[in-house]
Amino acid sequence: MDPRLQEMIDHHEIRKVLALYCHACDRGDAMVMASVYSGDDSFDDHGLVQAPGPEYAARMTASILERTDAVWHVLGQSMIVVDGDAAGAETFFLGFMRLRPIDGVSKLNQLAGRFVDRLVRIDGQWKIRHRTCVRDTSITLRV
Image (cartoon, rainbow, N blue to C red):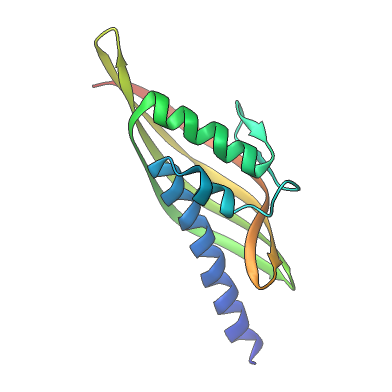
């Protein structure tokens, strides 16, 4: 196969993993979110929550279901570099979380940042081995 075609396929498959993570997060689906990680050897560092991928997925989705009425992620450009069965990706994101009212006050968190990922191909499928969430800016608004 032409190496350029393989690179296009790899980039497409990696972007699908990144989108699936956001889809699962936005819906509070711990099983689907956990499926994007390489297993217990993976790690997600989201600042306040740092854990192996499957544990992170369980903890984060529990928090989302408990504390929010809605969550939305929008992914921006990804810089992806593939080296055989390993890859690195830096992907810009916007995140919006409508928090459940506390004492009658509703809030909306808005985040902008980057997912910095190391991925591995396992049995033909790309998985996140290590993720660092870099928050470039955030704001909380009363709504």
